[in-house]
Image (cartoon, rainbow, N blue to C red):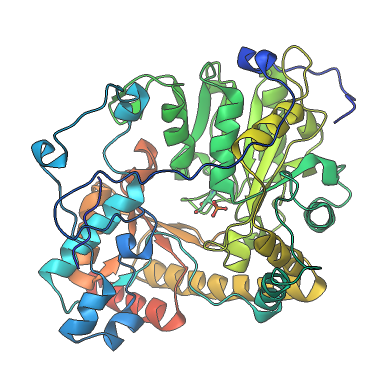
Length: 501
Ligand SMILES: Cc1ncc(COP(=O)(O)O)c(C=O)c1O
């Protein structure tokens, strides 16, 4: 088959941020539940047996690991694997009919191909060139190990209960089940002054990043670590917060350089006028975690300038040293910060989808309006609550046995990280990250990241991620992910040693 891809709160603080909430909110009435609409297919009609594939789907990503591809050697099985051919269609072929609707100009500003689809495209091209290649992916950063059964059993039980009159439930609270919110508060924010009413359960941190951008609207300027997880920048572009892309960056975004020279913590004095600062620690892609002193500086900076920090702690459970696991460990953070996090990399929930965002009631817009109230309005409008089955899984994750099981999966990935770090260190590379995150950031001085990516793919059949895909500051680096079966990580290390020794 050929896949065609187109490309309530009491206010306890007087601190106000300098920008006001979107005036569009003033016209909103109180939340109402509306019937959900089924979206029509987004794929334009084409001739032939075409299947539209989501950019994140396994078919698109062609994630046949070494193990699975070695089991699938025959032509027939390779066909069933669904190797993806990226076909760019000439415009005339797409459709003869055009609507009167013009394309969102902000979408046109986005650079061709989000990073991971571009990697998938190159990998697919490699597989077409070398159909027998046993490609190992240490690229996208997707989890590989099975979800502990204490967690899947809870989800199965909730799923089965849905078939009973007593156990059936439909729409739940948009903010998430109270029990889960309170478990998140006590598991991750104990003694930090965060309670269940500050927590919004979601279908993942990436989705929350976009909802937060909707909350802020198009008139804010964001700052991001450079390099950083691409969703912050792309959602900013889509919201219309930026100008055009030139010299590897968008205008009206502050790129805060994080490199070995500054210990991967930006010089905050170089930021000019950012309203919202996206800060990820432990960081994807560099793997570095900010210390207590550095986060104290960040919080004090936000307070001085009136900015809001969006702190992404999706990898907090990977922290091995005494770097803070939450921004709310820092005094005063509740007045300046939002935190978003996820079960994706803790429990292998990248497919199950469950995360959360903390918006403290102390966080206020410049006019004194609580940010949490507007976020609640956004959540009630754009989201109908996380899946009840996923939430049952989340609750099981936070039981004493679940926490232990998650930690053991994390430890497994951390051992992988050590194997990758040792490999590159022995080969004489400067290697960063790894200690507090499942990512190893390897320096190839003077070389283009995409060239190194291509070399490793061509000569070792290993997929990595080119650092420049995370921002101009990532040029000259590649990110190697520790998410993989042990045999694959060992085999990839062997091949890399052979390539670079
Ligand atoms: C820094 C960071 N934040 C958020 C996410 C997305 O998390 P989720 O799966 O919960 O959407 C990722 C996923 O790779 C990530 O690296």
